[in-house]
Structure formats: C-alpha cells, structure tokens
Length: 622
Image (cartoon, rainbow, N blue to C red; front, top):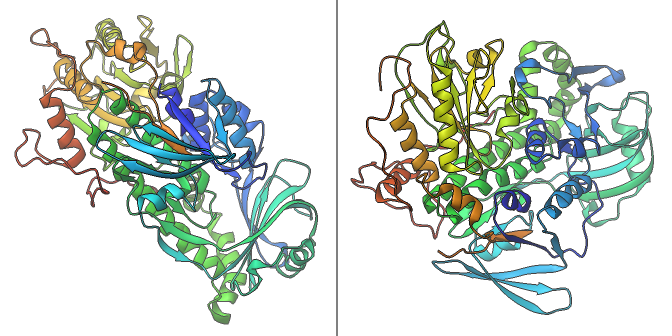
C-alpha cells in the first residue's frame, strides 16, 4: 500500500509494532496478476528471482496415482507472466521495501498504532514508540493493513464476521525427500484429512500443510518434527521423509470478513478485511490488489482531482471480490477437510482423486482452474466506474462487444512503439491511459488526426495524469502512436471501426466509446480527472501528499452519438475552469451512487459508515 501511494505522489508513514521484519516464509504463492502489478513497479524480475515457478497442480491418490495439470504459457491468459511462483513472504516484503526506499520512505519498526480520533477534515492518530514515548500524527486518511488481528479495525468498531473451523492445521517448511519431483504442488486427500505440498526455493524444500478434522486440545502444544513425520507416514501414499525444518506452526483456520472496507476516513485492506483458508493461495494476492485498487483513488481525491465519493467505489469493487473469495475457499476447505463420517472420508480418499484424474484431462477444467488461480479474470464490470457509449455499426466483421468490457483487465498484447514491445509497457505508471484505435476498416480514420488529438490531450493533462496513444495497423505516424502490425490488437479490442478505451491506473477498462467524439471524450476525462487546464501543474508541481499507515497507513491532509465510426470534432472551443465544478460533482454522484446526473433526487452517501448494498459491485471469477 505504501509503495503504491508513494508512486502516486502521496506522502505517507508506515508503522509496524514488530521490532523487525519477519524472516519467515508465511504467505508463499504469488499469482500471475500480482506479478503484473510488480511489473508495473518495475520489480517483477527481482521478485521472481527470489522464488521458484510452480510447474503443475497435482491431486495424489492411493498408490501414488495422480491427476496433473501442467502450468504453461496458455495464450488465452494474455499475460507475460502465466506461471505462479512460490516466493516466501519475507522475500516479497524485501523487494517492496527496497522499492519503497527509492521514494525515501521506510517502515518504522517498533512503532505501534494505539488509537485515533476522526473529524470532518482528517484523523488524529496516536502512536507508541518502542521506548514508551507517545506521538500524535495528523493525517488525511488512516489505512489499516495490520492483519487479521487488526488494531485499526477494532478501534474503528468494524465487525469481523464469519466462523472459525474446528480443524487442526499445521504447517512446516522443511526438506522433503520423496519419489515425486520438485517444483510442483500436490494435494493429497486421505481418510484422515488433507495434506498440501508447495515447492519452495532450495533443494527439495517444501511447505507442507496438514489439515485434520478435529482441532482438539493440541492447539497450544509445541509442534514437533516427529509429530509431523508421523502424520506424513499416515497420510502420504508414497515414502516421505521430513528433515531440516525452518518453520513449524499450529493454528486455527478462520473464514472472516468485514461488512465495509471504508468507514469515514478509515480504510481496511488485506487480512485486516478478510482472512480465510490458504486453499488456492489467494490471500496475499488479494490484499495486494486491495491496495492497488485504493491508492490511485486516494491520490485523485487528495490532490483535488476528484470528489470524495470516488472513494466509495473501493467498497463497491473490492468487497464483493473479498466475499466471493471467502465463500469459495470455505466451500473448498469444507469439502477436503470436513470429518463428515465414514462416507465422506471415503469419498475424499478415493472418490476425489479419481474424479480429479478424469476432470484434469478435460480442457474445461484445465481452463477453469488456471483462470481462478491466476486472478487475471477478476473484474469490476458492475462498478459505477465502468461505463461505455457505443453507437454506429461494427465494421470488418469485428464486434466491439467482444473486446474487453468496462471493468475488465486490459490484456497484454504485442504492440510496437517508442520503448514499447507490449501493451502493458504503455500502461506502466500511475497515470490513466487513453487508447485510440484507428480501426481496421479501410479509410476508417486518419491516424495523423488521431495522433494530433492524443498528443494534445496528453499535453493538456500531463503525463503523470494521462498517457494517450493511437493504435494503428500501419506505420506509426508519430510519438503518440503504436503499431499493431498484424491487426491482432484491433481484433482483440473489437476495433473494426475507430473507437477509444480509457484504462484506469490499475489496468482495468474504465470507459469505452464508439465513435470517437472529441466533446464527449473531453467530458469523460473531465469527470474522471478534473479539467485539463492546470492539470499538469497539479500533477507535477504540488508538494508531496501524506498518509499514515498502521501496518497501518494514513495519507496526510493537503491544503487546499453518430452512425459513422469517424472522429467528431468539437463544435466549439472548450472553456475549462480550474477546480471541481458543480456539474463534475453531479456526474460523480451519479456514477458512485446511481443518482441522476441532473441532480434530481440526488444524495450524498454519508461517510461515517460503510456504504450500503450497491447493485454496482465487482464480479469475480467463481
């Protein structure tokens, strides 16, 4: 969270009650979408160098028979990072800490968050240092990223709802000698429970997770290697020897979530908002994406580029993702871990491996599993920030409806331009990105005309707020153009006719339109980014903003349509005024709360409590 806030130009403090960073592996799986986010920071290779690729998923049955899905470069993933990696959490944090240092920021270890007071303008946060001295910090926002036992959540009075399982859960990071190869994940169901084995960096190093039906009285007893070896002998159907453990722990598993990710000036992210079974390796990845969703919105609001209701969309978009994750992991964990009597234990031990051997041979199951674990198909299609304006005819046999829908992740496709080899190279950075497609149909739109528009819009807003690029099928006519040599990007985006896509800083489609109408496009940019005049100065010349984060974080307060597919010129010169106008606020109220743009019956949702149910919620892969 702090790294992304800093990248967007906000000043923040990140405090942690721990005396030093943990060296334990803890969260281990880094999925494809998370690696893309690290690529946006420019540190993906540094992250992957600290881990090992997970080459396959296996379900291991009696006699060592297994069902297997190999991880490979599935073209339909449309990413340069198709393989999950096993990276110990300590290594992941080290990469982020080094990146954070590039902004002159560091985690303040041994500084505990103890409470806060909130008013209409900000929050007063109280901290306690390791020497016992206290400190009061004035901040614009308070972000609780302080884990499942979040002090921020408790001080805010936000409930943590759900259940705790009556299962014994034990983890060990150790050397594993067995006849199965390294670099693959194994799920091993048995009558006694389920074992999961995850590859780790190092020769024959694995994380083993034992899930047993009863928690019993052993939860407070120290865990021993002998106890774990006995479990492996009983539950793993091939000869297995554990040795050289570096971490062992025994714990209860929970399925808990908050009803609101925002309460006034307090936000929750990661385990502070949702904790669940580690099945699927989604927890750390979901928390990172919470931060990625919130940071750019905080930046726009703190800088005065967008009104505060924009922040309500964090709840709208991420709460449903979190709830779907909790429900999905709860179902899967109950299936593989419940005692359920002898019939269910037999089904788990014998039926599940047999079913997996059949299902894993089908392209349907292969695709479903890979789509789920990659997190590349989570979307915000029902968010009020996901809009479109489509008219005119599809041309060249290509339908715009088949392109990335508003709220969908933008795919990474080959494109050529100055310093660009793929589309995500253009998206890299804290800015919105405008993609103007010239169209596949002959004579559909003059690229030079679009080039002029793109360069002008980028100059009006400044590259820190907006990057505009024209995608053409021929030679790129200028520095604001990208060459789509084969037309593949046009076809993928449904751009038979000229059209435009506006991409959010987090890489999701915010708006798409056909035809390209200059007046409507400028109105859309004004609604989302504020008026263009002075925009570049605001983005580049303002002093850094502030946030305090209680491992925990908090930002400090700053003062102060046509039938053709052709581009339509502005009928008259536009007059832009600085600041957020009444019309801009009405438009944001409409998008954030579903009220009339004209303001009839419009209401501002109060910010001292969590927004209520909203039909515009994020949809995620089931």
